[in-house]
Structure formats: structure tokens, C-alpha cells
Image (cartoon, rainbow, N blue to C red):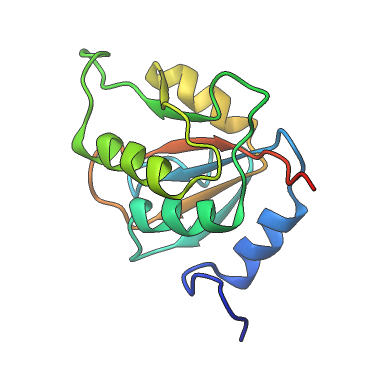
Length: 143
């Protein structure tokens, strides 16, 4: 057991977060996402919401301040200006928990899939809400 770490961060996920370098990306995705076939290694956190995973990850991982879009979600198909409730909740979590809060950017569905295919890893959650997918870019910890 370790102190001050969210318990939902599995040993595999903690190892992955530590192994990631500045500029590497992690995708936190919902249960509908094609995670196993998307390219990167897939870590599963079945039964845990994407919002809980986002909050836990941001407690230990800094967001990148050198990119314009360190947090990206998938646009609603047919309504790219829509903000699903889960995306609004993602933004609230980023505003409260991230070391450097940033406004969430969006990508068209297939562009999101393409961007996530280059991620360091994909974390598939048990999230059932649609559009519960977010791509984060890891920042640095400065002295």
C-alpha cells in the first residue's frame, strides 16, 4: 500500500503514468470505445467511471503547458458545438484538480480516434455515458 495515491490507480496504470514522458498522451475512454483495437496498449478499469479515472490521473500527472490543447475530447457526431454533460464534468474536474487547468479542445470523431491511436496507452473505463473519452498530454514537473 502507498499513501496519498487514489486507490483506483492500478499498479499497471501507475507504472504507465510513471513511464510516460513529457508530451506523451494517455486516452481515458468509455466502455463503447474500440480500445483494444485502437493501437496502443489497453489498460482496463472496468466498473470505474471515466470522471473518477480523470480525477485520479490528474492528482498524480501534470498537464502539458507547452501545447495549446493538453486535454481533448471527441465532438458529438452531427453537432460539433454540443457539450455533453460528461465533457462539462471533465472540464470541472480539470479546473479543480489539474496543476495547470486548461480549456478542453475537441476533435471530430475519426480525428480523435487517429490522435488516440498515437497515445502511450488507452485506459478503458466502465463509463456508460456517451462521449466519455478524453485525451491528455503529460507535462513536466519543474523544481
